[in-house]
Image (cartoon, rainbow, N blue to C red; front, side, top):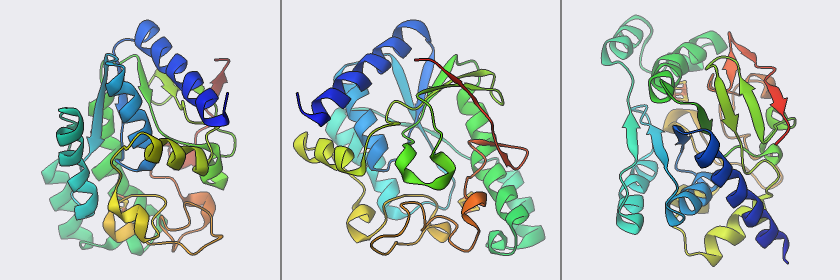
Length: 238
Ligand code: SF4
């Protein structure tokens, strides 16, 4: 059995276990390559796992286009969670539209308003959530586990692609004809908000283009961070 087939089988088994033992469970898709692997696996297997995205109001047009491509390909509507417009207006009025470049605190406050608070709404009442994170993506993800106790949301968090390589992801997408974000062909291995994501150079860390003006240790958006620090999420034996 090839490396990819083995990983697909393992990931299928994890997703089926989540659907069986942790309903209601949801998948948080950033509409990037890894998340399209999980989207394809979940929808083709017709698993009872709802897919949502955080529509921050600052996404690339190419990322927004993926919502329609998923609809066209799978006849599936990804649920969109948007920030509180009053909170956005207050931040922009007080600090400016792009104040996140000024300091890590300003950036985290923008992420809190546009991502963390909507994520809390998306996860309300759920028993588990799923992400497309992989260990190989960055220094901040080197200790990622397949199953974790997400203390901040009081639920289980699953990262079924933990051990997948970049090559595994692209082999899967190409061999299964899965649609993917056009930004990947322009040097964007990691997809985030438009003003906070740039293309990377060959050999750079895959997440080097995210919040590129900050230190690597600061580079999480708060979705996997509590009180401004990386969470010491407790790993759970899968
Ligand atoms: S990634 Fe940038 S624009 Fe998006 S929520 Fe965070 S700071 Fe704001």
